[in-house]
Length: 526
Ligand code: SF4
Ligand code: SF4
Ligand code: FES
Image 1 (tube, rainbow, N blue to C red):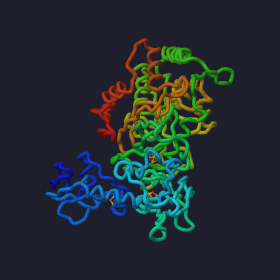
Image 2 (tube, rainbow, N blue to C red):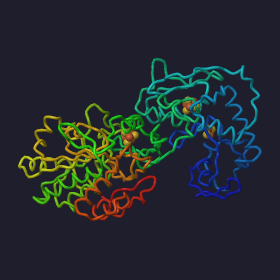
Image 3 (cartoon, protein in one colour):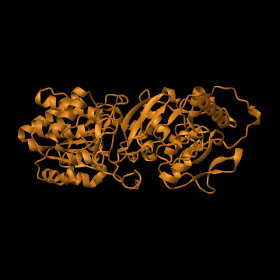
């Protein structure tokens, strides 16, 4: 590996590494706009100019590979003069409308001006060129041509990643501007990524604009629950509400990207139909009750049925459940109750997008692989139905599985209608809840600690961004309360403990712990 010196620090970096990456590995920032690690190098912004000894002029760090013996200065007078000159040039026609710009707080023009420039403008405001502002270019993306620094990150994203090529740079010189091709709109399923990588306030998300100043947002790393890809995400939230979701880099899953369906899917997680209190069916309506009463009733129905035969109790786990939830349900059914009647359900409603060659998967469940790693699938539904028909199965516990929507109401009634008692654990008042005897409200994935296993067997960690609404609780806590009420014995029901127990019992998870998953997750042992 070549050895070089950057700002007096001796560094080793693999051959082919550019100076921005090499400096970053040593904790040295080289400012840059157009360079993005997942896109081709175009070297057009010149913000990354550094002084390389024995070269006549400052060099662009993004297109200069490390070499043995190279000596680089990023903070010398020559480098600083180049950085200031580039910023002055980039800002010549900038409208300086930062107070009303939604990028404020995460704009690289603001940041670099403060860090590398800080000189008053020599260009009068009245002489600046004006271009288009607040243009809706499609897919919920707004364009402000005046704020654009023409780094061509967005055009390269649409050319190189989605291959849809909607945007281009038009005109010449100081009339240069980003625009859609005549007659076209940015209409593709990944458009939000162009907003993410725009380093300034030129591209903004229509839905997010002016809803929240970014410095008020907390960022919690998590995993998208929108499909079986399980893209790594950051949940940006404030006071228990999600304002936006951004992709988080995971080279094993989604690189730097996510789809717009996943990005905007959070509305359903904070809808009016969220369940916030336990409910029981009384005279044809669901009536609120306390957790104590709900757990008491469910446990006594299970205990009574168990006395007549443990196999009179069964369960269905939906593939929206976390690994820990599936395991906790399986443990309740087998270890606590002594039954073996449990199935999985991985249901995707019709009319949603199918597999593509970038990220999107037709299976809209984040944990189908987690279910199958624990031996659960829809193949288990038929034996459940047969045992209901034979009047053997009396009580069914349904976890995050909308059986009524998956089967249709008539078919559900035909196959499951003979049950004595149905307990449903869910986040929303879905159609299956309406048919339940007991409804237990549980936390959605941004509100809990746990993990999903994606379709390639990558186990990734979910962290709690904020608490579940109302009286809703994490499902593993509810299942733990139920087990405790049935047996009278306490057992640890936090996600770490349940994961550890799962890794001990379920072969594919052996050797893993929740804490060891890290930012990029870990691979199932199968
Ligand atoms: S719109 Fe943003 S990403 Fe596109 S060229 Fe302009 S500054 Fe760069
Ligand atoms: S591809 Fe799937 S997991 Fe990734 S962001 Fe889209 S919906 Fe979410
Ligand atoms: S980042 Fe190097 S020229 Fe733009």
